[in-house]
Image (cartoon, rainbow, N blue to C red; front, top):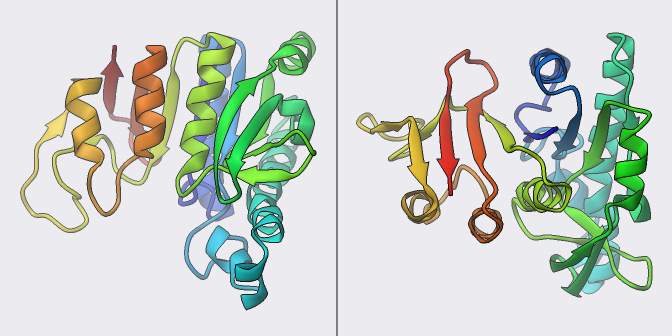
Length: 243
């Protein structure tokens, strides 16, 4: 079993999501069971992006609890869309969300910490479904309130679930084909990496647009969770980040 994580650009529109579904089909053939973690669809002013949801009202700045509930909706919508489109392709799946994910959070709204993960419900569901969809970026506190995990928090969801479920690795699908020494959208000269250690990888995340959340990468190093970073529109092998 592996975890596959699809970010906002991969989820942005139906054409992009068709590429996600192709990768899910391939993973099911190879690994038999797949837990899919999704981000909110798109970025910036896209209709269901996190930024767009948080700009519905300025009053969210006065209520962090309400702000987190609104933010969590982006990944819930993305999960529903992905699940429906998988079903239309004949892929049996189900969505695990809310308390059923077992992700217990604490700390502060908008930048919560994962306290623990109870995998009981997920493991039970994997006995009857080979493909599970889990909304990223969120967990629930003891009071049953949604809490989000900070910018890029869906990456942390994927890695924390992989560690708790003892998955083989996490596959991240990005808008670049591999990890680079510089942002290929901005730099004309950069190095492409086939394999990195965590000690080599983590410093590369100290930039304006890190390829995954740094907090998530640190958690992967701590739990010795292998990562495979690949391009959603590429057949290249991508980059392995290994303990």
